[in-house]
Image (cartoon, rainbow, N blue to C red):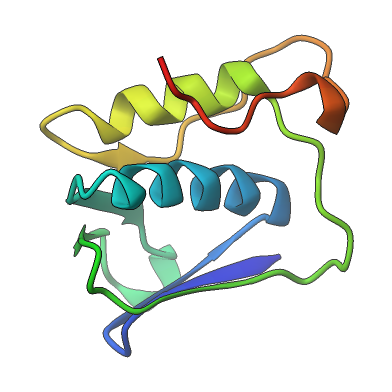
Length: 113
């Protein structure tokens, strides 16, 4: 289980594979200077429902991965996450689309049109 930290204000635990996909989508948006919301559901044990943060190029972001290997990326999942990031509600985790997981060599990580 990895962790995403936003400045010192918010932290969320995310499975490493999902976090790798989120990292790429966030990086692509911020590289193009496109700020957006990132929203997730909090653990019910904290008594909170969901949290949203405004991601922008000057924000301090940190991605901590539990595993040492970079997971294979799924282009369909990257594109689906990018669509949520471009929506008015911003990026939120969605389930990985069903289908075979491609090898790293099969995925263009730029998401450029």
